Image (cartoon, rainbow, N blue to C red; front, side):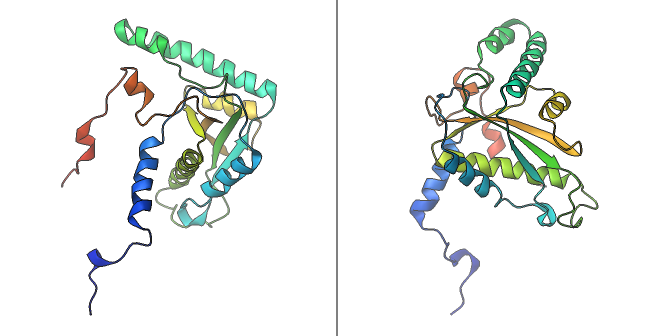
Length: 218
């Protein structure tokens, strides 16, 4: 008897697929954290899960850096403050008022801070798949960030991506390999509350666009 592709059974039962959809819905950018730390065993599990992500040529170009030193954290906080002030000056009227009320970083409360870099020319993978599109190393590292984020949400751990930073200054502050490209600064910890909608939507900054859920046909 021939089995058509549409009839091929999934490896995962319906309940799991429903819960996976819920995981995607509840994966939010967290800005309000409790200060109690996440156990190291949980953080290690999140890192190991992130490393299951796909990568071009099996290059695994992601580099996760836990920022523990108080002076380095303070330097990152100052970096954010300068960039955030500059960003605020770029808005006017009602947008400026709304921007000023947003809590755009969890740097003051989150117990863990993790910087993510990409080795853009790793020896691992021996260049496979990068000849015409070398930026695929960066895309691979971003995939690892997203995997980390989903795994954290499943563990009840919140993640906030701080993008209002000068990347060159952040990389210098953290004293990493100069060939690594700074991608993300993550605040990690247990959220004060959980929500299934983005905070920026709840605060009235922006609304989701249903048109983005439709295929573009060519």
